[in-house]
Length: 332
Ligand SMILES: [Zn+2]
Image (cartoon, rainbow, N blue to C red; front, side):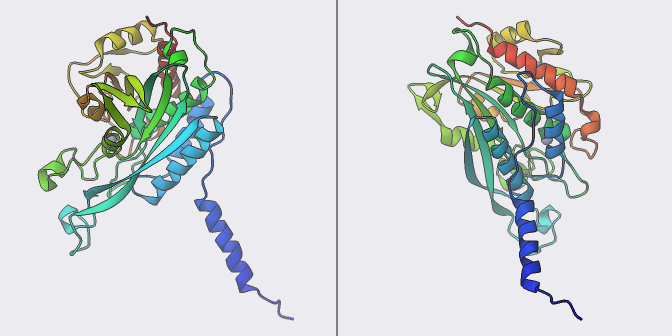
C-alpha cells in the first residue's frame, strides 16, 4: 500500500524550520556578578559565526539577537534604524558584476542602545561597532575588529546593570548607555576610497547617524535623553592576545588619567596620533571622549586571520574590570 503523502504538511514543517532559523534568539549566559570569560567566549562564538556587514540579512539577525539578549539582562533596549547611501559593490566600477548598477545604493543600518538608569541628570556612553567589514575575496569574521568590543560591551551591560556605587560615582549618578553601532567599516576597501571616488564618507555610518539624530544641544551642552553627556568611551580592537591599549589623541586627558589610576592588569597609555573611528562624530560636537584601541597588533587586521585564535578573553575581561573600576571611582 502506498503511504498517503501530505505535501502541505511537509511544506508547513519546512516553513516552521525556516522561521525558527530566522527568529531572534537571546544568547545564553551565566549571571554571576563578575565579568565571565565563559560568557565572553559564548558571545564571541555568536559574533564570529558568519560575516555580518551593515545592511546584510546576517546583521539584521545579529541586531535582533543582541536586543533579545540585552532585554534578558533587564536593560531598557532601543533599536534606532537609519537609511544611508553607500557604495554599491554590485557596480563593475567596484569589482561587481552588474554593468548597469548605480554607483551607490540605499542601505538600512541599525544602532542598538541599552540603558541602565542613574539617579541624576547625566549620561555616560560606552560604544563600539558591531558590524564586520565586507570582503569579497575571503571570509572576514572580525573577532578582534568588531567582535572584541561587542562581546565586552554585552558582558559589561550584564555586570554593570547589577553594580551599585557610592553617591559620588558615575555608576550611581549617570545613565549608562551601551551603544552598539552599525556600519563603522567602509564598504570599499580603504577608509577614504568613498571620498576619493564618490565624494561620500564611506565609514562610521552608525555613529554619524547617532550623533545627528539623538544628540541635542542646549546652550552648548550636549544631551542624550535630555541628560548631559559627561563622557563617551569608544572601544575598538581591544581583544588581541598581545593586547597593548591606547587612548588616541584627543581623548580627554583628565579622564584618561583617572582611568589609568584605576586600571588593573592592562597595559594602557596615551598615543600621540589621532585614529579615525566612531569617536570622531562625538568629538566634532565637542563631547569629551576616551577612544581606546590597540593600534600595535595589526598583523591580522582586516585579514581572514582575525579569528578567535588571536583573542585573549582574559585580557578583554581585564579591560572590562578596569572600565568598571573607573565608573565606580568617586568624583567631585
Ligand atoms: Zn575594521
